[in-house]
Figure 1: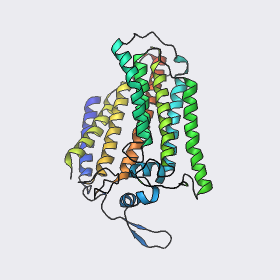
Figure 2 (figure 1 turned 90 degrees about the vertical axis):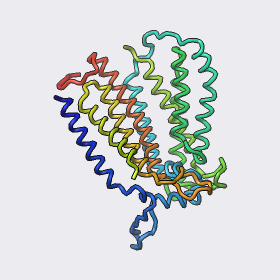
Figure 3 (figure 1 turned 180 degrees about the vertical axis):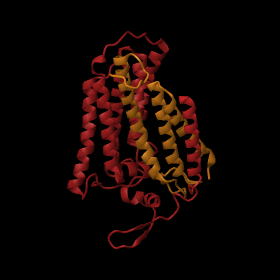
Figure 4 (figure 1 turned 60 degrees about the vertical axis):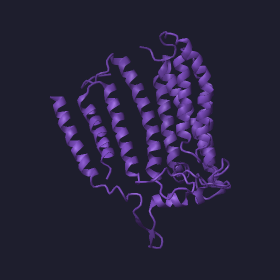
Length: 241
Length: 110
């Protein structure tokens, strides 16, 4: 009975979704000119938000990658909140699984996995660091780079049952990264006009040393995400029963 | 109009809704919620796509770029979803150690 009702409701929802999607004007969503009224002088700006981002990112922020410019520069406060959510989740996991360390015995992994993961780990860490250092030039950034680094540590945990993250080092890395993020935002308040505003020279777009504070913040985010995800994996690994 | 993408989105969200409504195992409910989340992310990315556009990284060779804003939002949503799933699984471990089961029962004290 329960399943029948669920199937009927889900199919009805499917039909509703399809009908509503058929009204989306797909072809000109990003291209259409949206008119916004300027609150100060009452004029209508002849520009849409996406086209503003695409045409002005390079001049305003110095970053080539528009997604990175949005995440770190235009909506940097949002990203600070998101990092806080991630931190809260990691804290919750650590809190709930505090006393479960040293669970049941696990079988040793075989030789190929152990030696192979030892060989591959430095390259995984290097790839993760490359991804978040080049966040303003290539696709990627702090979040994917941190996830890649955490996957490297996860591989070590899978192959060595006795591999633990050093809790002290993880928490110090995480706190330093978070402090760097907030401190750079406060420096923007001091040297420029608002929180998280760029106060460093923009440099030549397309080079590593460009885009002002964007690479610094993204490196901090990379360290923070990497340490938090590895500590989540480390806590979830040692669960009894 | 790009129908395959929208049909995929609708199917993912509906399957997730079915799982949330019909299943009693909390693990399966979390999997269904992840499916719904994937559907919503795919919907945002699909809406921001412009036919013929490339990734929004300026190098002067392309005239048309896709909308960068939904991509930034989805980048955020994926990480949040991952951490929320980890927290949910942790609560599930706790629930299992208290009650010895993964099933949801109405009126259960724990």
